[in-house]
Length: 282
DNA sequence: ACGGTGCCCTGGCCGC
DNA sequence: TGCGGCCAGGGCACCG
Image (tube, rainbow, N blue to C red; front, side, top):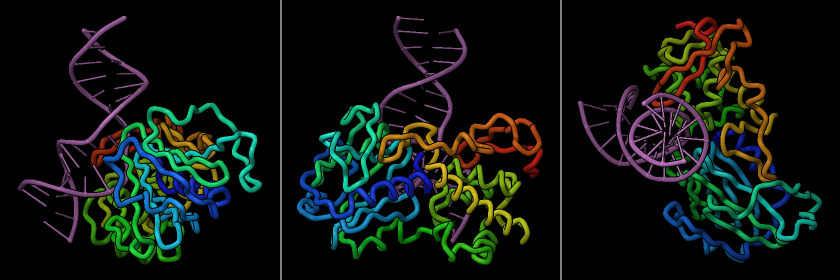
């Protein structure tokens, strides 16, 4: 599922290929999750491709298009003519048929470039809005700091966790605490920090908070380095799978890489937590 | 204000 | 081979 590392990989793949390209046409076949008026963007060129938490932001000057991929969303780029290059950044051919029955929106750009927004489960959305209002978007307005930013430091984390009595696993999934963690990287971070997912957030010692802070950054950095996790639908803009799960320590892992014991699964806050009961004591 | 639950969706998988 | 039921989970409405 697209969490921060997956959306960041998509962003980085879009930047060299999409910036400067002009949107010529947009069509959707799942209008239920289309907000604003994306038609307004036709004729405008992409000026920037950004990310905030799990939200992808494509700016067209004064206007912007936001995407949330939720669990099964995909953003895939393809040339209409496969032999053509995109400004020196060729897109490798791959087997995915496009468009397909999961395609919810199709955006055509100059340079024979087509962006497909696929989403099997229809949870994802796209929204057009003035660039100046992006920060006011409710989800973004309340979003916590980026985990790799200076604002996300041990002092901030300690103060934020001190107010929260819920299990640390549930708190890490709360986007107002820190942006971009989902079920995979939250479990990975807790494994690195050797913290049981049911530990009350406010019970963490200063040393544990410091360790968790580093662990979150470690999990996110490794996720980005491996171009994300492809447990289900996620692929890069080239249609390739991310490889992080080959290196995962907890999420859908059998044996603990530290002690060799079995990784346990437990439902916490409506999500399946994966952890080592030996290394992550309650 | 906080935490817990159910909902939106589809396809894969399990047991019978 | 078919089919009902469960599971996957991000964000939000709703409830206590």
